[in-house]
Image (cartoon, rainbow, N blue to C red; front, side, top):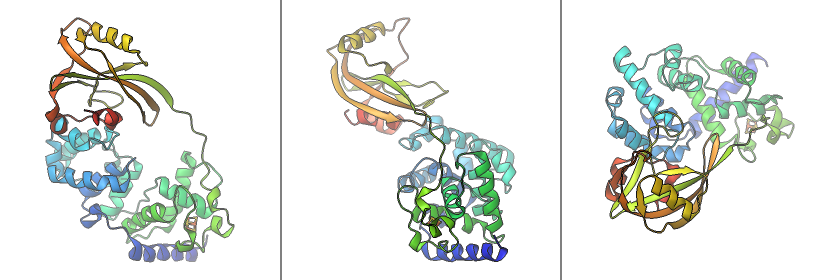
Length: 351
Ligand code: SF4
């Protein structure tokens, strides 16, 4: 592509952004911390869902030093329902490092940002370009899709070769004096015009005259994708164990899926009522008749939980060698003090 054409694309995109940019809370005051927090929350989560979480989190931890001083229960509680909790654990860990090593301010360097826990190439580029004006394309699914459509890219976009090709291509078009606006314009273009599902809105796109797939009437053929592995399916039985006004909870291990979160006790397999009673007896519990609850499904990145559940009144509980560590929480405390992942939302709603 000619330099002149690259320049024309750059100008058309920035003009479009000026008129069409989305008003978002983190754009009101794009400090490095604000950009960082919003980008971490936006990974895997829709913009609309993030807005309220973003405001609440900032109200509790207005700067990096205050986040570094937060307890696990405090930050997990503020993340409750957003999912992918490793994000907030890394955020907290990185806040500690930034406080110690950089006096509570994120470093103005792509490489140093990239070295912090939870900050990958995309997030480092977003912070570097938006908050520090460093010209670094922030290549995510949106940019890959736009790239693939504009040039009719004939390779699956998930490959690292596609990522590198896209980064080079965007870098050639990125203005030195407004890299943050350029990246944000592409984020908005991908989210509102060059849409991921369904037909792109090519007639209102600032790049329609340069876009090969549009000119050839084949925009929906792109991006090409690698075949996905099917997710592993896991059967689980969940217990709402009540005792008067209290409910039993268990903390998940500090490593792995939903690390450190609180959950309703559960076990592998779909147990019958008799099996459920026998299972609880082994845990030292004398219980009433299990009441079957509706089944529920929760999809994680790599697996799907297919859950059946029982509500069970615990009459007596004796600690045995095989019994699990449980805490008995008053129902009124659940809301304020325990971060329970949305995988259990269907059952939590029944309490
Ligand atoms: Fe996407 Fe259509 Fe714009 Fe091409 S013209 S970049 S396919 S919205």
